[in-house]
Amino acid sequence: MANWRADAWLIAGLAILVLVLFCGSLAVGPVVLAPGTVVAGLFGGGGEAARIIVQEIRLPRALLSVMIGGSLGLSGAALQGLLRNPLAAPDLFGAPAAASFGAVVAISLGVADALSFALPVAAIAAALVSVALLVVVAGPRSSLLVVILAGLAISSLAGAGTALALNLAPNPFAALEIAFWLLGSLEDRSMQHVLIALPFMAVGVALLAWDGRAFRALTLGEEAAASLGFNLARVRLRVVSGVAAAVGAGVAVAGSIGFIGLVAPHLVRPLVGHDPARLMLPAALAGAALLTAADIAARLIPAQEEIKVGVLTALIGAPFFIWLIFSRRRDFAEDER
Image 1 (cartoon, rainbow, N blue to C red):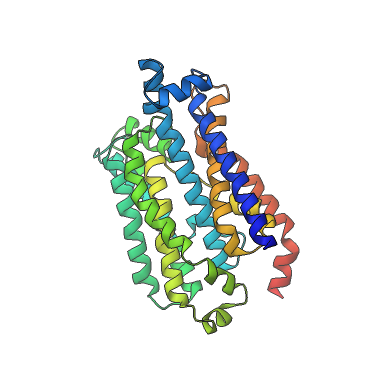
Image 2: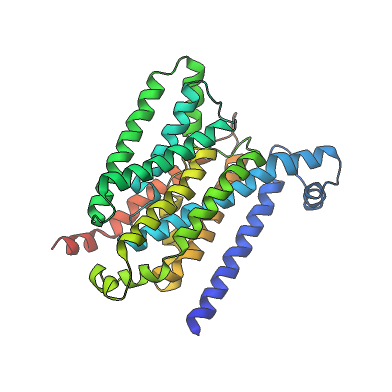
């Protein structure tokens, strides 16, 4: 009962924080809008200028920040529960790198520009292909170590392909467009991008949320989890497919945004008693809050051009990752013994 009440308060607090940041994202930009103007513009009032700014420019951006941040936070929590490793991140199995490769190929071939419909379709298709390739390479019943190694190989191959596509870009403008897209940004996105990403993210979130009890059982070890009736091969396949669908869709519409999936679960893990099943929803809400806050900060930092949100998350996440490794050196040394 005490755990249920604590979780309810935590989830309610995080949900309120996400809502406040969502409203702030609608109000903040080159033109700062008053709360009343935001509400009026959201429902078609307040004049044509307010309606265009809120509904067509800022609403898609705010929705994507919540969707992508939530997907990254949930993916990070699921992977850390599956691997029983707090350093696991959503890019471990290669789907984000494959999605980036698909989008970069579309740009370099002139099939799509960074804001077109074809670019996210190509990225999502590449992410799904990477999952199929992972299953073929690793096999449906292989060990977790083999799956991780296969994912790292696919990620490295996709990264090399992205670098090659950038190197062979047909003109400097295409190369610049690819480089800026890879930095990760929510700028100039539309409801079309929201509608493209939403079904894939919904499927991915459903797959990832399915195995909370399995992650809790895995804290006792793989043999114990199997003895409790969990099919670990199916659990791994669901997690890998869920990460590919959810994170791949986010990469498809916003480019590469790193470290949210690593940082968000760590911020809320002490508040749920380090229980991987209880971590899932709070981690998703924390990820949504982190990315929305970073996107607001990207608009507020004075600069000639808006700072890419992927750059901000990396600047925050990389030092956090270094601190995390430093703080857990003793645990890693004990594991090696």
